[in-house]
Amino acid sequence: PEHNDERHFRQLTDQLGQCRQYLMQLCRQPQLLGELHAIAQCKDKLKFIKAERGYSGLYLDGQAEPNYILLRLTGIKLYFDNQTLLQVHRSWLVNPARVVCLEKLQKGKWQLRLDSGDLVPVSKSYLLWIQELFPHWWNKSA
Image (tube, rainbow, N blue to C red; front, side, top):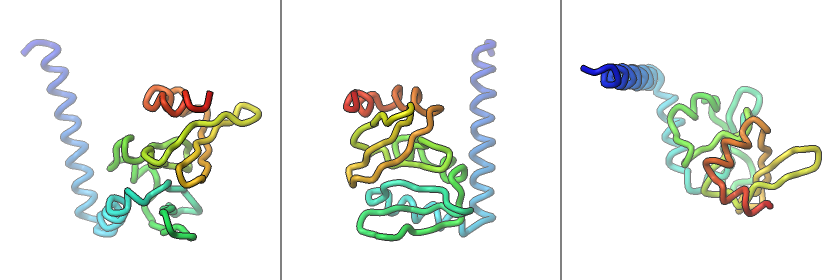
């Protein structure tokens, strides 16, 4: 095989190895599978997920209090793509389908406004990445 083919094959092999590790982890932790299922099942009502004192709070439409799960944000991000859950801050994942616009605040801070009226902070380190993935959010705030 050519050099490019070999590199591509190695990348595929690495990705398959990661998938195998994730599946093994799921099999060893049935609670993890249940929590991932809970997120997937309510994704249409899910506004955002916020890390809170060792738990992750699922904030849903029609509920005053969040549903708490043990799975941390880093674990959740492994199983959902950016079109389903987008990390915008080290402590926040947002449902991008619920975002209305990106707003600039004083002192160089930013936030997302959701269709529910909720406001989600955005870290500076995520700004350019968000602009590339969702430029229509940026344009509405200008």
